View 1 (cartoon, rainbow, N blue to C red):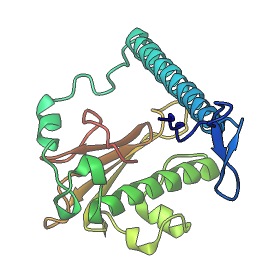
View 2: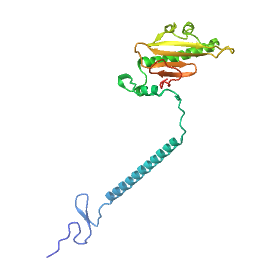
View 3: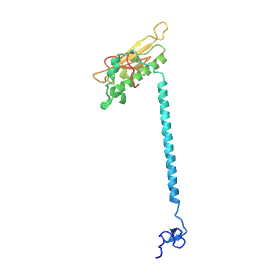
Length: 223
């Protein structure tokens, strides 16, 4: 009984067969190697990408470690609020701003934000008055008379943005007397704000939660 040739081998020459374009198997042909080449290329590309990611992650870890080391080696910053009553700091922690958002996140709002801007305007007006008059700082009426401030500031204790303002002036440029200085207290009227504010010619804006502020109180964070 004759032996039947295998389906993918030629019965006479025993060479592997491959399909021609029309579907018939042709003797002596070999299967294409393109799929194996594509597979090998994909493996190489995958290895390259993984290696790059590993190197990048290692570099990031080294950079973070170096940054932490630099931060630890920095000298401690001086405490500008040394000697301040700790109760003032503790009592400010639960402060809430608009919509109940903590004040240290949203910052001052409403009348508090307005009075901080007002105090900046007063400081600028006083500095300009001193530069142009060369004698001393001015009262509210003097600043209004020279148009450094709006007429709403006229009087001894003007109320601006829901705050009562008190201006104190001392000294002059006369070398025989004390040097010129000024300070302003801004106190809330009828619940318009929680903080009492203070500013002076040589001091940034400060605040107190329980009463009139002074140069011993902590700095306002937003100024």
